Length: 589
Ligand code: GTP
Ligand code: SPV
Ligand code: MN
Image (cartoon, rainbow, N blue to C red):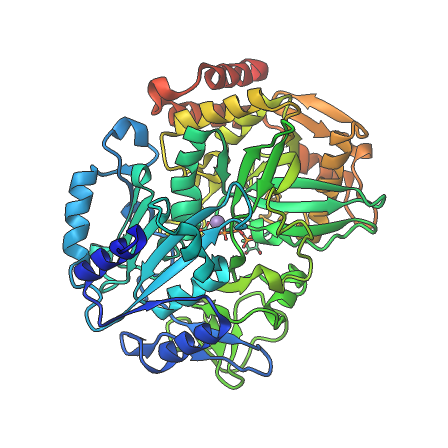
């Protein structure tokens, strides 16, 4: 008798008609073989899926050039499919499941002809964790199969764990013909199912990541009383060897990976890495908020990564612990066969191949690496990995940070008065758009809790859910907002950022311990100049004033934008959030 899993795989094979089916065991030996196939057999428009990089300088590293139209998440082609449009909310594209299934059936019909179907059994979360989920993804490209080995706990054990049950998350993925016209990423939250066709790009194709661990998991969390969030997760060790766990939600390409392995500029402080993109937050048996990272790897932005900005990531990328490491759409140094991107240490190489495979003209204003070029690397390569990373119950959270990219308006750090105002601060957050998704870059859009593209249900209900979690917590974490990106009148960043962000973390911890002074403003509490550690930094009082200035006119304008955004949620918007907005406006008047 076939198990429900075997039956499901058979059905997908009957639809997609692959040449062969390969059940992955997640071993290194297998990954080596699949990469070999990606080098020798599989191609995208004539280019092999993988190219080996300089193994002396970049051990276990391979290059992948995507289809030129397939370099970022495509939010306009991403849907939540639930019978009730109201459940899905105005923050998502909606499609009725009947329509979606019919459409997908046509697109998937024969989509794997002549190809290998890889069956990937994997866990999100530590297998011993009560919060972990067993999942199976099907894909037809080596790049995705190998990426999933890095990003998740993949292996045969998951098949045993699923056994005869139908309780596993299903993901069907095919790159199809890569055409954006036939590209869809569709989530069926009621069925624990994702259909993705036409893209091999991370967030569209690694279905354990944004599709399951955020969009579907956020819906599960809503129903079951927990939160799935777009958050980095760290432990900050203080000079007296206490560790405080902090979760930080910043939108895509706004600094989570950098933050998660920050190298402290303050002596005696150390940051331990737990996660850089996704956190699942649960109310623990002790009534506190506990968090875990369900992933096992980093799918990080390459440009800007260097020994100066993120030395721990450079070390992670040079570490040999876990095979393999992938570079996608970076440039390549033709002479040395090494990956290269804007911002990398050292001189710009003489001979570069750009991300589209063409010779890059030195001095050209075009970027050699795609702005959203990325690396995929195991978290077990990370020299600052927290010893609590594999703890099945997660870590207890002391503070939550909501951030974003705001060149104006928002001070470096603000503490919320309480949980409710903290939730409002997250809900009203806006950020300048980045290259992580296919849309115009640098325009401000509302991105509540950095979850606008990832909340799998009505965001009004999501705000209410956040409020209700606070009610249930015995000792809710303090909530802060942070902004590393404020600029001066010449467009220069006011704050040095990166390793100096530890100064903000120190103030946050001091606030948690009631050790630092703060000043009340209409948007929350900001640090007193003498309560914030600027030692060793050449930072003027004048710059400090600019960094923390709160402009009434700008905020009243902001309030209008927030109101417009909130309006679309109608009855789903909690009264308490409305009241917080009114209070903000009144306090500025
Ligand atoms: P996703 O993987 O898309 O979710 O992005 P992320 O939030 O992990 O962003 P990441 O850490 O990769 O940072 C993206 C960009 O922000 C990079 O170009 C960084 O150099 C830049 N960045 C990160 N931290 C800081 C900072 O403290 N200050 C400044 N000025 N830039 C930063
Ligand atoms: C993001 O865009 O927020 C990412 C990359 O972390 S992706 O996995 O593609 O979503
Ligand atoms: Mn992300």
